[in-house]
Length: 354
Ligand code: FA5
Image 1: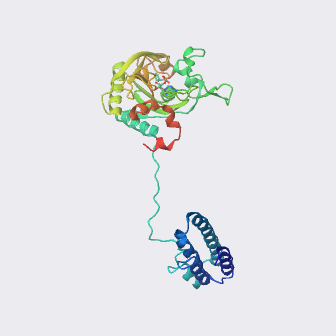
Image 2: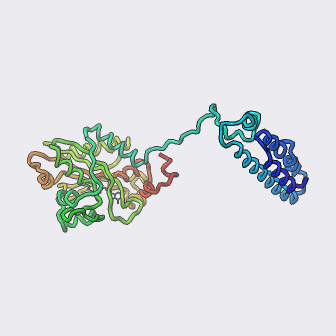
Image 3: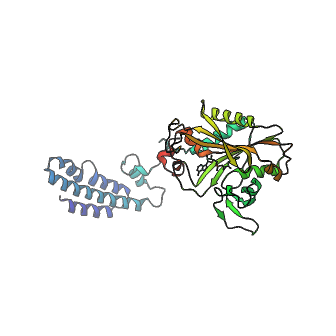
């Protein structure tokens, strides 16, 4: 029989089928192993190429159409469940085609793909653990700060040039007296902590910060810092350097070259910059380290007496150090990532490597 009349005949018979048992018979008749369509499809190989393609396309099309009319009719009989005795035959083990809708309790379950931590979270947790082992407690502060905590309490008065790098993303204030900004560094957290706690203490404050930056391989507009503060009766620069060295050794799990340079921050005196030799290029110079061979990772210094005073601590009794490392850059060094922007790109090809 020609294909088109075959389809019309099949559709007519399927539509007038009275139950699933009849439908099962029609399935075998029109699409089963011995059906006309199956024979046509099998004999395609003997046809010349051009004819084969044409006939093949047509036969498959007709097959699909018969299948879909069968499926439609079957659905009519299947609502509502539970099944009739005829259904048993159609949907039971004897019937092969419509079984896929059955639930096989013995089939193995679908594997659930587990997510994993972001590389910056992994590194933050590692840093926290190292410092916790050195007696530091983890504390947090808000991402929206007031002018007082971000600047004034940190010995950065209005119009001081040191504000320029951090004087960036201001928000609409709730009250006239409170100027609010997205915090440009995590140093405000040490002020908030000193306000409420009495020394001696050792704290670590990880968090997100925001700046108005032109982005490049090592600069982002949002990034992460880890602020550290240790205050006691005799905490000195020697303690600061010892903590820094111990940290780098544990973090990189090997000897790492570091260098200490004089720096300037209004809230520390003296101030330092601790640089780490770029592990991407081993100090030769690359785009990550701006061709210098060094990455600025750990600024810090001895807490300025004015900051202690602002928090009601007598600088004659208490002293200590503070630092604010760039967490993203620590992660870049650890995993040899040459562009900070990858952390925020949501690119799974990158993220799935951790
Ligand atoms: C500060 O933010 C000071 N609050 C640090 C500090 C704390 C000094 C306590 C003294 C005492 P600085 O602006 O240098 O300092 O930023 C700290 C670190 O953040 C830098 O060393 C660098 O590793 C990282 N960082 C700075 N800007 C960016 C940026 N745009 N993208 C990624 N990381 C950055």
